Image 1: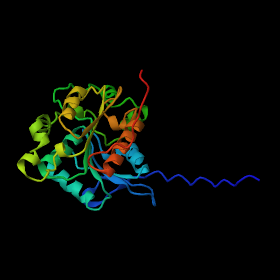
Image 2 (image 1 turned 180 degrees about the vertical axis):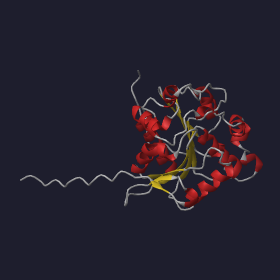
Image 3 (image 1 turned 45 degrees about the vertical axis):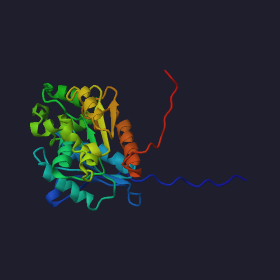
Length: 283
């Protein structure tokens, strides 16, 4: 007599984006399926040319693992105080830990919100940091697509999106955003041990995940390596052959998986205790 095998539970429904009304109009939110555990929240700032809709795949992927994603529609001219206020509005009700994330100039604006406007995230997720203002912009649309992503699906998303701002890489990275990120003393903030003050909300005192394409033609990775080396609590992930839109590139599944692993470590504590040790034979 064979034992009965219980059917596998149904997979949770894919997360659908919710558009927020009123002052947050344009912001898109992906939440875990009803009944699923809420493990944390990511508040995301898009970069040049982007809008929240281009993060549909990333938002759904993180939501499937229990993390809500709020892609903000603040625009590229939002001041650090505006970013900090929008982050606080989400963090006031969202499941912790609540992380502030950004891609391209959105990553710089996330840094500025923490350093200049007192945003208090549990950590920072910085993707495609543009730490140089003199990288030549791509020429036509095909060159821009090649610089952004090698993923055919995402190229199709960008091409079909009437709200996507083509050619925005020609916009110079504002000095007000770039200069503080290039100055270690400004980024790290004062030493609370020497000053006797409580630890500030500074990137130097926060867990930071930096995601960057190793073949990014818009933001050279060497500058990002140097940036990450100056922040003691930073995890740097370089994506082999990755282009600029690292959250939406060909390796998007691996990048999302790295993001979830980092978020899981952050849930345990800001020291990011190691949860997995991967050992491979010598090559």
